[in-house]
Image (cartoon, rainbow, N blue to C red; front, side, top):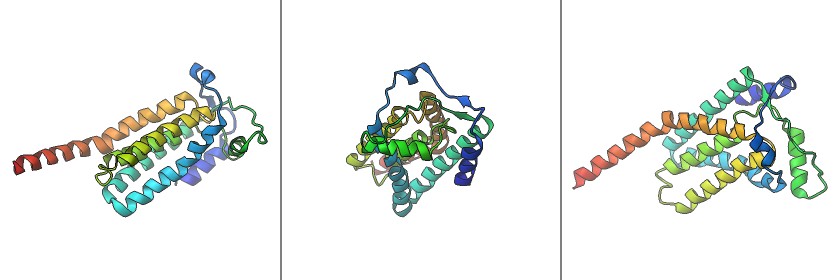
Length: 202
């Protein structure tokens, strides 16, 4: 349901929407090089879903619950509270390949339906899944790489002027509450189970 719902909002919310903006946005410079982590988001999220589907069903279901609930809440917010930005810069697509990519991103993705940022929210969700995966618990390279990519993707949303800082904080807040509902209790149960196992062995 997400894609047709989002497409409907993109087509219908074209005016009379709330502008998301704070003073901090004005101090963040535009940087076209952040188009790279911004686009890597698609591989990051899609790759994580596929990986956990084939290797770790428990992590897969938790990740899907986190992403699907969060995206649904985001759509509800954008439906009842139409929002967007108004600070995209003029882009010269002939400057370099990165500017060319941003130019076409702007043409295909409107500046509406930005709060909360799905790029930020889903990136946090994927990293949480990586950090809570038992199969990846010993792979420090992947865990560190996931953290770095998550941070770069979150930063890319504001350096490309796709989102306001408000959109990112909205996503972080939503992720905090969903984490408490989906991961915290399960994490506490796993720690108690591990402690009980160690006690039994001793």
